[in-house]
Amino acid sequence: MKKCKITVMKKVAHDDLIEKYENHIEDACEIKVGQTFICNGWKKPDGLCDSAWDSMSAFVMVLSCGGEDIYGGWMKNKKSVMISCNDGFRPVSFLIEVMEEDAD
Image (cartoon, rainbow, N blue to C red; front, side, top):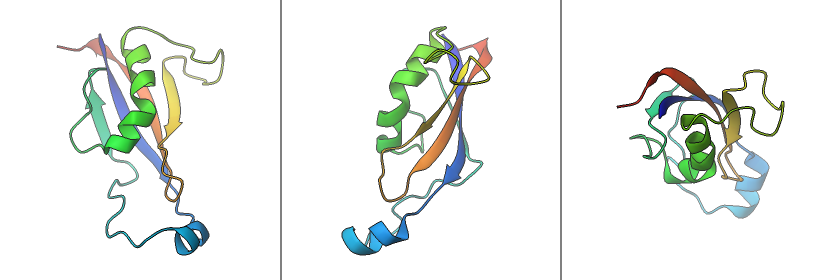
């Protein structure tokens, strides 16, 4: 299996939706833009929230097992994907890339 690097690319907050629908939550998302995580394809990296992992784990598994060109030409780099977590109030975009060394 290949290791994958997960990089936080962008965070968005939909303040209008938060104000209208969400109960106040302290520190709802502590992930920072530029933060990276390394995973081996089957285990959630420490520090990555469960919701984000649920949104991306299938893509990580495909890439770590040698799959590429997900959705036929979607990404310029065939060994990568851009995925967002499923938080409708504060979506976070993650770039997932295959690392070339083998995982342990």
